[in-house]
Length: 296
Image 1 (cartoon, one colour):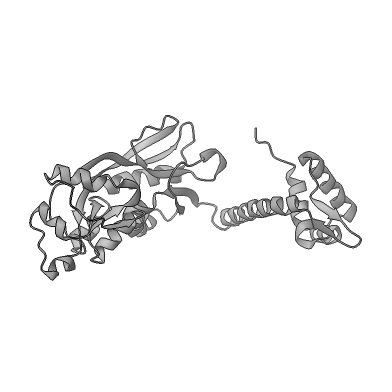
Image 2 (image 1 turned 120 degrees about the vertical axis):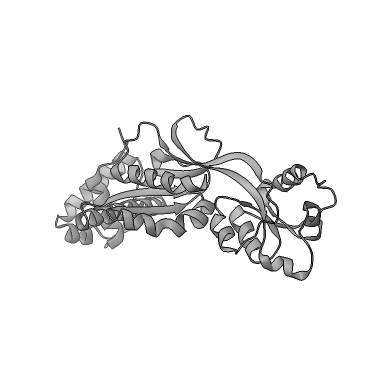
């Protein structure tokens, strides 16, 4: 069971905090000031802390009360918005999806119009995030994550294996420095992802080129930024061949070599085991897997 304080008392607390007055809260809620005071005292007793400092003509939140009010106000706002959406569109299924930023910007966003056209009765709420998702303490229904798929408490659906391939802007080759052989990379700036500095040495080893002698290059914090820098002609990046497929097919990026580095990691669609799968979750899962098939 959820360990929640009385919801009526939270609503009264929210009104009293906004008005800085029990009388003002009473007027808004159509109850007596005495009833407001009773609800606040019950909430303070439940929490074991003082939420207000009582003064002659008004009440003032304590420092602890201010922190609690911020969280309560946000929770009530989200509940209000969810209720309004439900009433306005009772047939709409809402799915909250957390997505790795590179996957979101380079693959999902360019295709979102197709999902919206096919499933107008499903509303997606999307956030970009990396790392662990605490499904128990968030409103996230599903997530797209990068890794090995070894998450024992999760239902995992494979989406795409991640292979890295050197990619750059066509403009980079116009300055006269060739890129005919992997050894020619010594004449160009290598764009690195800061947390994965091992990737270029691994690719060069695969290509039969010794890493020693290469300059420091350009270091960026994500694959998304590294690929964007390559598009701008700032050097050569190791791009995800699947997520960059649109830029490669359109000619915004070129791949001078066909040697791909297998990262042994993949993108997965995940959600907790035992979680009921709603209509919206099911159609989103099926659509993403279907859209991925031509690229795998």
